[in-house]
Amino acid sequence: MTWNPKKKDEAQKSVDDAAEHASSQNNDKGQSAGKGHPTPKRKDAQAQNLRPLVPADRKASAKAAKARIRAREDAQYEAMKNGDINNMPKSERLPWRVYIRDYVDARLNIGEFFIPIALIIMIGSMVASAFLRNAWASIIPMILLYVYLGAVIIDVAVMWHKLKKKLIDKYGEASVAKGTRSASYAWSRAIQIRRWRLPKPRYDKRGHWPE
Image (cartoon, rainbow, N blue to C red; front, side):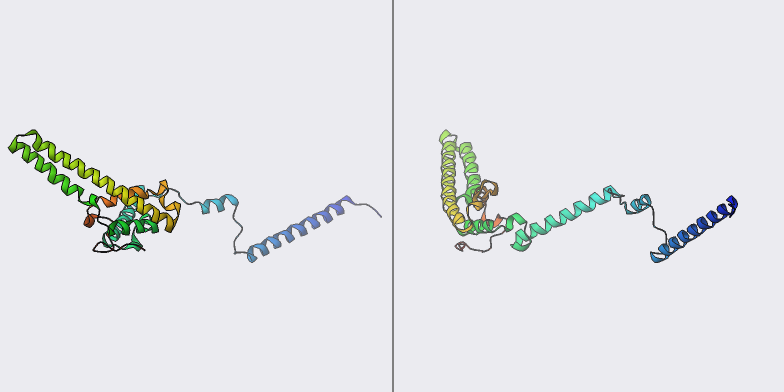
């Protein structure tokens, strides 16, 4: 048998052509079996998934966000004015805060008259000192004002002493912890005029004590 290098090259070329044809057919099958188009490159796929982190119009976006916040705050303020507890801020819906409001609203607080009485005493003192021109005419009203202020402080202290025990018995120590500001919430409400309190008292008259 005679060895012919030309025939060997022709046979090798035939094998290469057959392999290339088979590979082309497989690619065509993969493309048709998929979505009908070649698989995109990683760079192109990542570029398609990119989304801008900053809106195109930042001023309009900020204005819309402020409008949403303002609308929510207005709705919550109206809920506090109307006594709608379901739409009040979350802090006002806490069960121990509801209990504090009901307790303070149920009692007669000396401090809720402090602002009008203080104004009357101060105006009376100025008028008396102007007409009487006597040092005692201004000193006596100021003494009365300080006496009344002392009575308000004692009344608030007694109120909180009783209320704190009730809160602990009903809701535990967490209801009177420092972070809850329950004490300041109670006394600040106690020195407000009843009709000006927010959230609005749930009952028109005093005496409706919480359970």
